[in-house]
Image (cartoon, rainbow, N blue to C red; front, side, top):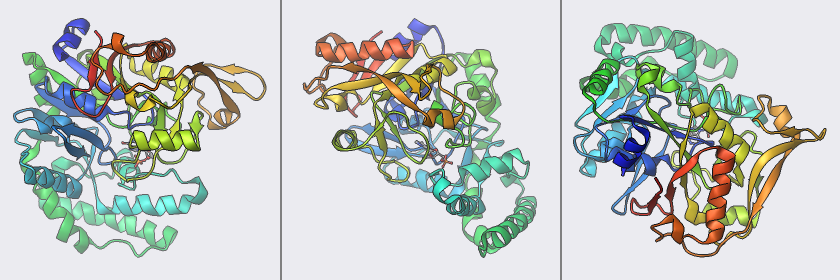
Amino acid sequence: MFKGVMLLLDFTALSVVGCQWGDEGKGKVTDFLAAQSDVVVRYQGGPNAGHTVVVQNETFKLHHLPCGVLYPGKICILGNGMVLDALTLVAELEGLKKRGIVAEKLFISDRAHLILPYHLRQDSLEEVKRGGGKIGTTLRGIGPAYEDKTTRRGIRVGELRDEKRLKEKIAAVLEEKNELFNKVYGDEGITLQMIEAEYLPAALSLLPYITDTSYLLSSHLDRGDKVLFEGAQGAMLDIDYGTYPYVTSSGTLAGNICSGSGIPPGRVGAVLGVGKSYTTRVGEGPFPTEIKGETAVLIRNRGKEFGTTTGRPRRIGWLDGVALRHACRLNGVQHMALTLFDVLSGVGKLKIATAYRHRNGDLIEQFPAELHILEETTPVYQEYAGWSDDLSAVKNIHDLPQAAQNYIKGVEEIAGAHVSILSVGPRRDQTIWRL
Ligand code: IMP
C-alpha cells in the first residue's frame, strides 16, 4: 500500500507529521509505513514522545526509537535535531531486547544533544516556579536541553568519544547549573558523582551506535532507498507556529526535517499529515474547542486518551478545523491520515470548528499568534449528524454510514487535504486506504 502512496505522490521519501497537539495516532501510521521502508528517521524531540504501536496484539510504547525498530533489518536513525536521554534510551533498548527485539541497525547522530540529569531537574524546578502559569511539560528535560543547545553549552552525543574531555565539560556546566539551582530555586543541586555513577555508563554504552547520520542518510537516498521521516508531537506544539509558549521546544513541522536530519529541502519528499477525528491535548495552554462533561469522558475512555509518556488524562475537544488547516498549510499536507475514527460512533451529534468569532464580532479564519486573542474568541461550529454503527471492521470507505462519509468530507474541506488513510482501530488491519 505504501507503494500506492509512493506511486501516487512519486517520491522515495515520505514524512509523517502530527497536525494537532501531538498524540494523533502517528505511531500506528508510521508503523504501517515503516514496514515498507528501508530507513526510518526521527529528527526532533526526544523522550517526550510516546508512540504507541500494536503489533499482533502486543503493545509497544516507543519514546526515542522510531517504529522501524520493530522490524528486523530496518535502518533506524536518531537525527541531529533530537535530544536524547541516555538512561531512558538504554532502558528502552533493553526493554525491547527482553521482548526479542534487537535494534541491530540503529544509528545515532554525533550531533544530537544529550539530555543530562540536570536538565530533568531544571525542567521540574522551572515548572514548579511557573505555578499557575506552568506549561505542563512531560518533565523529561526537553526544554532545558534545547535551551543549552541554543546557548551553546549543550553536550553532543559525539563528545562521548572522548571521556576525559566530556567529564571536564560536564563538570563545568554542572557548576553553572548548580549555582542556578541553589541561588534561584533553593535546590541542593546534583553532584558530578551522581552523573558519573549512573548516567555516564549508560551514555557510553551508546558509543557503537554513534555516527554521522546526515552522511549515512544521504547515501541511502542516493541509492534510492525508501526513507520514512517520523515526526514527533504535532504542529500546534511547534516552537514557532504552535500555541506559544504552551509548546514543546523543537520545530515539529516538516520544514524542520532538513535541519534535524541533515538533508536539503528537495529530498524531504511528500508529507503525510496525521490528524485525529476529534482533538486532544495534554499539558496546559489554550484549547479553543475543548469540551467537558459526559461527551468528553465518553471519548476519553473509548479513545484511551491517557498520555503514553506521563499517563495524564488528555483534554478532549471537537475537531478544530482552524488549527488543522493551519497545520496542513504549514506542512504542505495534501494527504491526511484521519485516525481514531471508530471512537466517534455513538457520540451523537458532532461538531467541527470552521472559524473563531472574536468578542468584537470579527471572524477569525487563520490561527492567531497571540494567545490573548484566542482566549477572546469562541469557535464557530459546523454540526454533523452522528452515527452509532460499529466501524472497527469496515474495510471500504463506501461501506461507512452516510453520516460518517459526510463528516470525512467536512474534514477534507476544512483541512484542504485528502483523507487517504482512515484508521478505525488500533490494529494494522483496521486501516482503510483511499488512494
Ligand atoms: P515538553 O516537550 O516536555 O517540554 O512539553 C511541552 C508541551 O508539549 C506540554 O504541553 C506537553 O504535554 C506537550 N508534549 C510534549 N510531547 C508530547 C507528545 O508526544 N504528545 C503530546 N503532547 C506532548
